[in-house]
Structures are given as C-alpha cells and as structure tokens.
Length: 297
Image 1 (tube, rainbow, N blue to C red):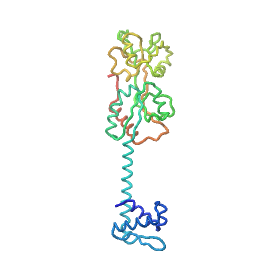
Image 2: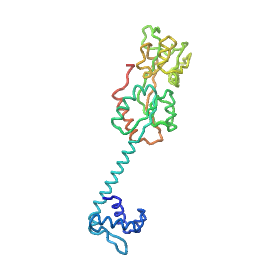
Image 3: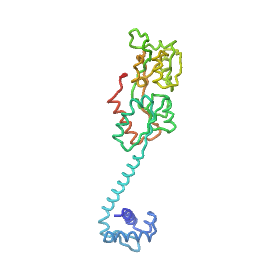
Image 4: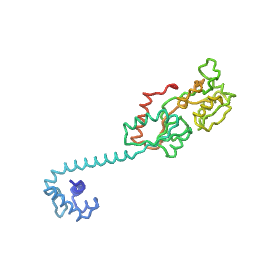
C-alpha cells in the first residue's frame, strides 16, 4: 500500500476539497484526482464521494479511516526511527584528553562505551598542554574533554578524581626514612619542570609556602623527564597518572603538605549534549566508581 496516496486521501477527506488539498500536498487538482481514482481501484471500493461542494467520505471510507490514520502514524514512527539510527551511525564524539588520562583511563572507557553505543564513533585526541583541552572546547573543535580543573567559564565541569602529587627523586636521594617529601625541600635544587603548563599545578601547590624553584623547563615527554631524574640530573614533581608504571629508576614520594589536582570531564556549557554524549558521561562515572584509581600500582 502506497503511504503517499493514503496521506493525500486523508488530507483531501480532512479538508473536504480536492482543490484545497492540492495546494497543501503540491499536486495539481487533476493529478490528485487521478491518484485518488487509482487508490480506490487498488482498494476495490470507493472512499470519497464527489459533489459540487467538495468531497466527503463514503461509509466504507469512514470505516477505513481509523486504520489508515494508525497505519500512517506507524509509518511515520518507523521513518523517524530509521532517521535516528542513521544519524547515530554517522555520529562522531570528539574527545580531548591529557596523555596520562588517555593512557590509563580511556581504553577501558571506550571499550565499555562501544558495547552500549556501537554505532557511535569516538575521535580521541591526546594533548600534552594543560590548557589545550579547554581551548579546543571553547573553539568548538572538541565535544568532551578530560583534564585538570582550570578557570574557563565555557566549561560545564564534572569532577572525577583528586589526583595526588608526588616528588620525583633520584634513587639515592637521602630521604632518611621519611615517607613524604616536604615541598620546601625543593628550594635550591635543580627542578625539572614537566612540559605543557604543568607549572600551573606545581605553583598552586608551592605558592602558599613561598617556595622558590630553580626551574629548568623540559620540552620532552614525562617519561624522558623521569629517566633524566633517574640519572641524577635533578628532581621534579608530577601527578599520580603521569608517573604510573614508570617508577623503577626513581623514588616517588607523596609531597607534604599533601597536594592534589582535580581531574574532571567537561562539555561546553552552551552546547546541547547529544544522547550519545550523555551515555559516554554515564559510562565514565560507572567506570570510575568501580575502578577508582589508588596509588601508583
């Protein structure tokens, strides 16, 4: 059964006129009349009675009309569902995440997300600069970010985890039995500052104490900084995920006073979240509730 013919039949019946219906559906009156004649021949009995005042339903047409309306509504629902699925199939969620988060969290999160939204693609972009995720979000180049909290008003922020900060020291550093490293002890030592504006988090930790660092900016990745420290070339401070799995050649000691950086997930505050982005966020929260990071294990 041709749904288009049924739609036009319903329009003509509701408006009581072929001429009015033709204006609505975009057919000529003669074309519409010919289509209704063909529909009645296909069905096998008349649906409309014509007279000088317009058209009206025959008794058979009136009896059939509820089923036609139900059929057309079901057909519209089907087309909407097809459109929704097709849109999802082509949907891509753009994610920007710190390298440490991308390495330790995202593989499992994306695995779980694919199981519930297999038709949605995720374009993961790894960044090394502390502010870059927020800049990408602000400019519309990404949809979801995973980073440490920064002062950006465009971001709808969801806190995820308080990540501990650690002193990174050569193996032979004289801790003298201490299980924490005083931040004041960084003063006067060659401090290898991780690249990518990690100094924001370092300064937030030391500023209240008035500690002045002898800073050497390292334009290399975190693992290389750690290896340099392992060779006695200085000391540093890094966060838990940055050093996880890379601690064999150095000492990693919590700093005192204790310092953390808040890791979280952000979307743009003025952009409507798709259903898939909401599901991704739910997936992240479930993952962290069951797999909350702890220590450097």
